[in-house]
Length: 269
Image 1 (cartoon, helix red, strand yellow):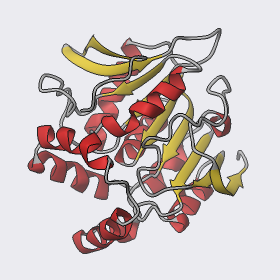
Image 2: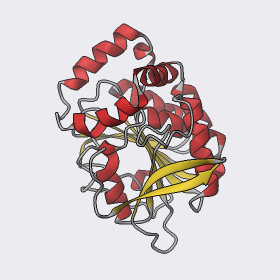
Image 3: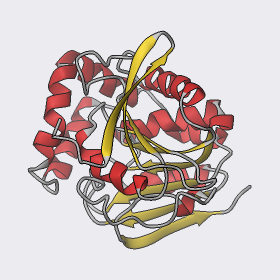
Image 4: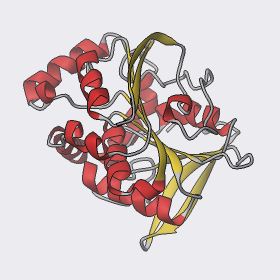
């Protein structure tokens, strides 16, 4: 993982009898809720700038789940349900709940489960590049999406993610992906009670627009936006925050680059 920014601190907490690693930035201002970030496939480096930007408004946390960021950080198996359970345990023990919960990629899938199963922990939910639509739940289809997306990603993403992937190992990464492919976010999101913001990069092949539209339509109260970039659009773009994490409305609580165009809004049912 790249060297940490000066405003980002490493923290270890005892949760469920295990050491739980996270990165933290900022401090709470008034009644602003904490922001909790859940990374995709266990790689933290590409979200450090986003963490720093969130920390400019409140206390922000980037969770090392399932624990690929440090050799001693493994807190759970590599899978959507296990990561969601670990996140629930951490929010129960560490920050002041409810929080603004932000998940990217497979982290968005885990965050969905947290919000659905423990509504008391989540004030608002932000899903960035949520994966995987039904048509990508097979090997060939996912491989095609990878190629399409890769063409639009920055080469600098490699050193920001690969070290964590290597610590996780190919078997665990594969297990994580298969777990995500067996998940059904389109069903889980119907159980979420809090406001939801969904966002995708305009070149994001893993989170195509029809898929995001479907999730937004299934939610009780959701809004979607399209921003510049591909699947990992938060990478190195966290310094351009939009909205405020002080609001209990997820539509104003994300840290996003400038939107390419606005998406659909689904009113509360």
